[in-house]
Length: 231
Image (cartoon, rainbow, N blue to C red; front, side, top):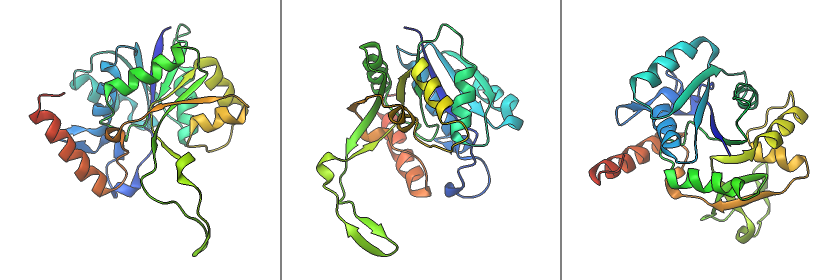
């Protein structure tokens, strides 16, 4: 089954601070986006990577990736005003031969290659949709304003990561049904179709770089990997 990885990277990521878009911030001297694309490209299951970039920066992003020796077929297409639109546009740009789509956050630059392959393998085994998950470490409270109204049992709750995997037809149908919405979770769109979403164990290293503290943690993890001789 030919597999493509889609990376929506058209957003600004202002929580990391003003200036350069989050996906183009540097981590260990290399843009976060490049780290994420390399991880996907190094997975045995991935045949092509498609990045949805800001429409006015498609050429610049393509040149950036070309300069960093990404070991796979990579395409850059114009993204949309929302993450959902960017995913839809990237999926529409895929070759007709692609049957499986992995959707990955550019802001998860250190996702292990093994996790990428595990998600793809679950789709190849027959699942319509798959998400990597981790148990919650903290107690979760449901609040209304500044008042706690409930304490959910966290034993059945999971934090969801990416890449999320889908049969291409299922993902395309989910986005068509949700046209015009602003969903940030593709698996949620598949759930809305009434289809079952499977899970695979996630990885602590696949955390999302959203705030300055996350960037510091990513720098430390990357330095540790480099010292150990890992990509």
